[in-house]
Amino acid sequence: MKKNIYIATSLIVTVLFTSACTEDVTIDNGIEIETIEAVEDLSEDLFESPDLDYHLPSALQVASIFKKSGMKFNPEAMNPIENASNYTTAASQMLNFGVYSADIAFCVTNNQTNEARKLIGVIKDLADAQGFSAVFENKDLMDKFDSSLGIQDSIEYVMVEIHERTEEYMAENQMMNTSAVHYGGAWIEGMYLGVVDFKNNDEYKNIGSKIIEQMEILKNIIKGLKDPKNNDLGLENVVVSLENIQSTYDNFDSVKLYQSDETLIDLNLSTIEFNELSELITKLRSEVISA
Image 1 (cartoon, one colour):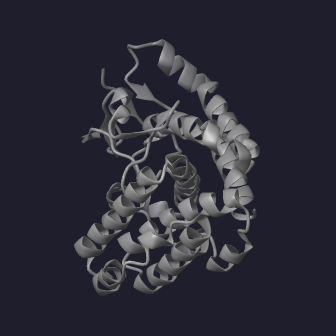
Image 2 (cartoon, rainbow, N blue to C red; image 1 turned 45 degrees about the horizontal axis):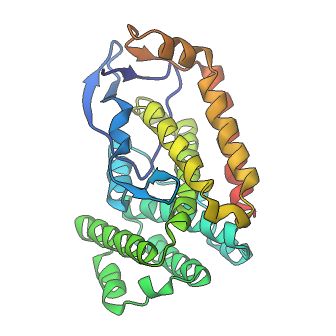
Image 3 (tube, rainbow, N blue to C red; image 1 turned 60 degrees about the vertical axis):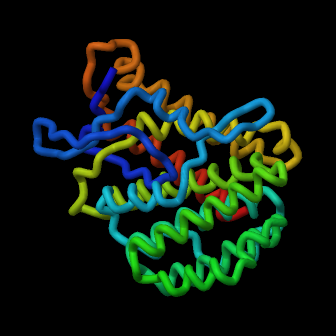
């Protein structure tokens, strides 16, 4: 089954590491959105945990989402680099590794080379604190990063290589539960950047919503954070907040109607619903980067 999704008077950009089968369509008011295939497609490319599986797509995918969204570069929306030294617990380091990973994708796709170079240093430091500095100690890889800055296709390729090397290292060292936490941070930051952009970017009020697939991804994020290997990290508050976001969304009248009536083609979130969802996302993001 295929359904269209748009938000009445309120659309959210979600710039995440995600991939779905989509095609562009135009609805009544000329807004170009994306038609989303059945959400079961999101089960592709899963990494395995002993008890759980969760979706961890590549950095190239977030870059393509940024490009399609029309999002304007807003450095003030990103997590300040100065905050990095405050992350001294394992949980805060893992979550904000994901946050800064979303931010660097934001920079790269907007050709902000100086910001990207600063962020790769922060990410390297957080990787070192988590015990996988080997990924970034490869001089050839870092040289490639430096030489590719400002060349869109090249830098995106290098970012994919960094992501793949990180995942390979974690898989070999039984650390895939850590990747789930990274992705949780990236999801939170991506949703936050989307909310900020929508509220401040009048030019792109017609940004295609990806609410259905992002909320499906959220379920996988929660599963990943609940991996038994993460039990000692103190992620309970983050998990509760994400579950609250999920349940709030699921209980919106518009969502319940959409899910109960298969004849409906469009899902319309009201302005009130959008604002409620965005407030929850903003609050959680503030808590994560303030850890």
